[in-house]
Image 1 (cartoon, rainbow, N blue to C red):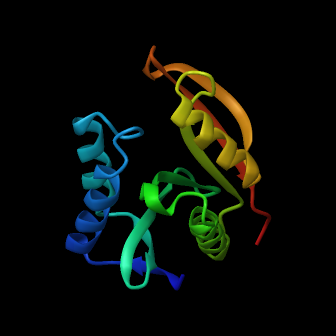
Image 2: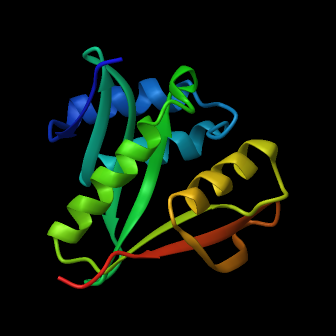
Length: 157
């Protein structure tokens, strides 16, 4: 499998890749309004895409939440590419980029463990990547989707 990560700058390309990937992930991004919000709000943010044999397989969008912290605003990898190491490559590229931009911390929000099986896998993935549970916000999104905040120390520049 030949894979590469590229920063995408063109808004049309960001939208096409975001839509292609998130439409494939209805178990995670099943609410069309939320999916569309992620796609549209990603257009003005740093957008990393992973390609397999020149076809988009996934992406990760970076959001600056403070001068110290970069957030994984949204991340998705098409189902057929799960558990092949591509998600780890995206996280590593994001963290390397965040460090190069002088961020000391990374954060990501997801649905708390124990609510949905798909999100249990997501929580396990972030923990395996070295992210630590910081806090749960039970009503940030809504009562059925308690928001778990993970953080990771990236180091000082």
